[in-house]
Image 1 (cartoon, rainbow, N blue to C red):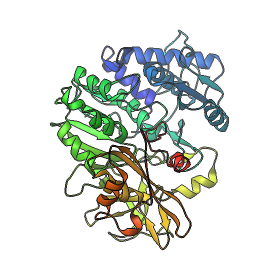
Image 2 (tube, rainbow, N blue to C red):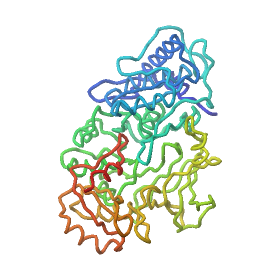
Image 3 (spheres, helix red, strand yellow):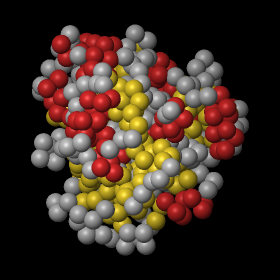
Image 4 (cartoon, rainbow, N blue to C red):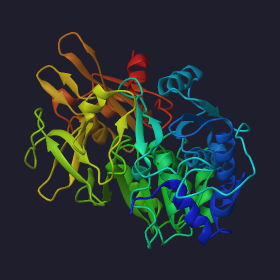
Length: 474
């Protein structure tokens, strides 16, 4: 039976009212009973303001506000409205543009979340005299990172967000605590919010990520499950946190939001000695569809195979399926009700095709169905007669021990049109790196330009902003 998120929270609150659902270290905790009661009060207050079914409500919160955000999000959904999660780290102009695009009726921020006492909510969703929300009703509009263009609002229904939830066996039963540092307003962050209401462990996070603070969080709570983005993993390894903190409690370390370089995955195996290192591949558009890859030295660059009823295929330009070993466009099929671009039928028709989602990535499948990414379609460098994969170049650069992290991107070239440039964080000298790469890359893949930076520019979701790199490249 299809569920709604407010309905799931009601069920959990009834079964475990005093159990802690979520903790922000140093800021407080939220039990299931408190969460459901406060969300109901927010729903009543919104209804009192005339906000209800289908109205869009912006939620602009920071990472220290996870508890209030969780209450506000479920209150908006319980009122029958549509939540629009936005990070307070976005530029004010970008927030205004997104709120205008979705036609937000109201905006909630920390300290501005309304609350009203009153009667119990009714049905599987909704409050007071509002008709209960159903699985097919819109629940969320989440904006993409915009790394390849203007951010798009991706709309999801209750059935999409609650897909797979409410089962008898809850996710991550091996853990009492699940630690993450994903930001509000991202797809990964929303995944953690759903885990907080549905999964077995208490979800713990912290107001601001630093490698040392996050490692201390893991140690303090003896977290059995940990989720990071590759940038966080790279920072933790570079800081050597495993030498100062006991990370032996971690049994599952998951990486999401971007491919995990093979060398980094191998180093994580040593830093987290008892953990299974797992890479998750999806997109805001495709969720909850995903591939999962348990790190395998025999397939170090694969992002895995589809799980939970989803599917992946490699398509030619006309949409036809390509055989194993052939590079083409990655398409992913969701096992849930598919998403759509809000207010953009043309873009929806381009990306969402009969239950399949065009991922915007190029890749191939091996004979066993494992997916390998070649590049973002927009990041492929067309250099002379060749097409260069930035992921392949980055994997090679990461193999140098003096490289902490790296990003490859295209720059103008007077003869070739475009050529390869690489931004590096680390101590390696440029000439040493060039010599190192000669045996690992083809001549057309070798960087014509190297720059060293203190840190790579990233968006709010932790992905490298290659448009910014092109601007700083000399």
